Length: 410
Image (cartoon, rainbow, N blue to C red):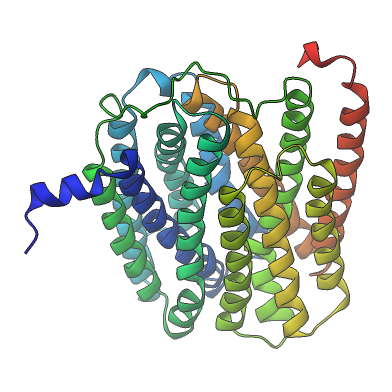
């Protein structure tokens, strides 16, 4: 049997990355279950498409509020303690969610389960804002260029592997009942808290052979400002599409098309496979940096995916559409993650900006998509997604040409 002190040493190798990647993987496993199961649980309690979008959107809106509230303070506090608080609080919120669902199924409790689930979703979003930005800042602090790219890529591959591991099984579980997926969430959240606790204190973790103030040869001072702002727009629009897929596509599969919860879980699994593949590849090379054609190609895949959802009822093509959404959105995620922190010192604060932008995108997709679905039909949200990505590409083109000779403004 491995002694606890020996295990701590093993988990503290790789410059403190291993336990952090483990925590990200486990937390993402729990969130992967949540995103697949909650739409169906909410609908079983009589929730509307708008309430579904509001529920999922409120998670990201409260997450956004948390990121904005603490972004200026994150670098002043110990990242480990903050992440532990966020992970531990999420364990409690999911445990309460389990109680709400169990009582709701028996018709007990003074309040509507739908309202309580929305409230718990909001609370969980705030708690999660204390987990991801500190963890991501912790991983990236003190690194630039290819080393930064490698560490961010390893971290991103870890959480994307977690999002890949659970969607299909979440679909199977929620087909059977509403409680087993939430039990699974509780287990993963507890394990994530344990993994963070095994990590070395960030104040004691010093990167080897790398000075925090060293400027990497990979940095392009002229191009970086343009790519940073373009990546912000692209991240926003791509997560509008993610918001649509994570909320309204579940409704489309079950209540408009003849597909089951596990079919939706399989489609989300395809998206997660694409996300894992792209983030893993991005971590292995920096050849994609500052390639505008590749940047635009990633967003074109989002446009094609919206059209596929609009014009096909084939499960294979719909699964392909979610795969393409995973491909495009993950490349935008990796791009903004890299361009957003390159050359910066306040890494946790910059990570909070990253999380804020993707949260706004998800909220817009989930909430506006739900309203459009309820009032204008189940397919209208995807015209909205197509339009948002198109406008985003136009804005990025303006940024590319407008700041070419005025990079000092950025």
